[in-house]
Length: 187
Image (cartoon, rainbow, N blue to C red; front, side, top):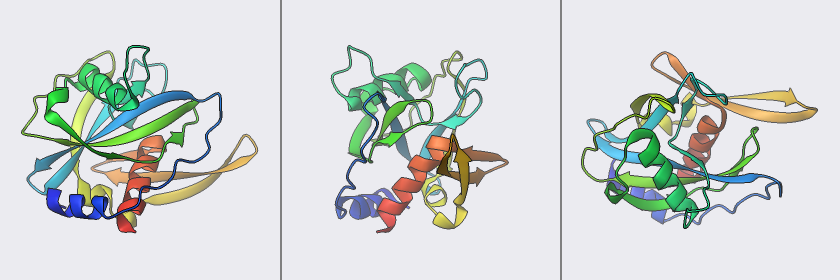
């Protein structure tokens, strides 16, 4: 998928409304960084440090919880991306946001899509990130690659998405956000 194809699809859509999230959910934001690669647009993902208490070693987007100094959720996503992978906020142009989602760890997570200009040099914060890698956006958004499973957790049914990529599984809230993006683009 090229930049032009994504912009055309995304700009023609009516944004999906935010769901009602629990009042006690803590605000957080993540960035879906998109950059031009050999196969069109590529989605930048990270593997969380294995030293972290929550979700160690899982594939994720750069991002995190809101700080008091953040002017907006967009600024949270940019600040966290700079802290985690050294992404210069000046290189990132906002395309839009996806509906917020509630995480099992108690966050109201707002995903932002950002178009990255040029070829950034990523500098990983080893306390937070073990690896940064890129997945072709067309692959990530291909609904045929999304495997949905319904599980019972704490007496409620939850649908969990899994997306295979080169010997690893993208799953949990990261795959749920990608799935939501794919559904929105496919409309």
